[in-house]
Image (cartoon, one colour):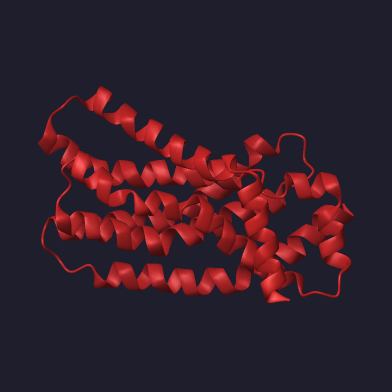
Length: 220
């Protein structure tokens, strides 16, 4: 069963390569704007780019997860999930993981290249990678939850970001705090521990929240 779910999710993403490349292109386009605004001061760019990377990642996850269930809702797939014998929680868990693998992981892979382009220090580059690995699954999970919460509403493209961005703030705060701590030579283990705790808390319970939310959205 698990193998069939994984194959299905992989087939969906490989049939629609836009879902892989568009977030990555969007990420690079947004990042390329900041040097045009801030100028070519390498010291200034090295200081602000870690934060700008995180802001751009948040925008990218919003783009990827905003209409996550739209096609499933139109095609009746969600009703099939809810009435099938297969555990919908397991299906939703693998869909969250697949969304992260094909939207956030490509961005994370390119972080070393971005660090070289903007001359971000090695220590900052490592902590950016670590915070993104821990933080982006949380962002994707929350974004998908927002998509489920506004499913079927006429103006869900506007409502979803308004609902979920406040829940992004703790991840952004602790990630930025860890990066700042590395920059000034302070310990950052507490921030990383908090991000890890948030990941361990959010990822296992999100499929159950999604199931409950989808049932409410379909019934209403």
